[in-house]
Image (tube, rainbow, N blue to C red; front, side, top):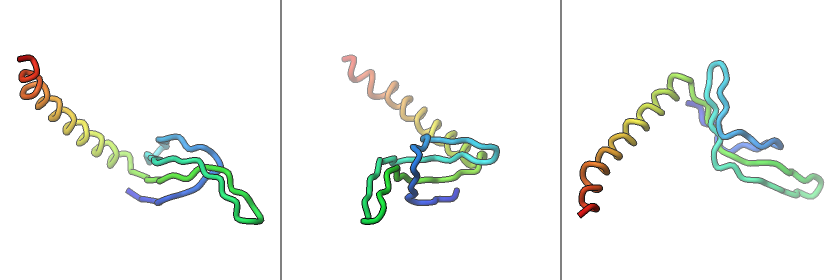
Length: 84
């Protein structure tokens, strides 16, 4: 993973871009208009992180397992108590 931090662009970014080797995740996308006297910047500011494809697959798999465990708990423990 390579975290590029907060970046700016004049083009609205896609939340996720997949290329041949990487998955680029853009989050916290906000429009920006900044006047610094001589120039005006009109664009977007966002957090940008680059993942290796294998690394991203591992992250998604782990999140999926966590979600599955949460749903199992909901269905086996919480839902029956709501039906009383």
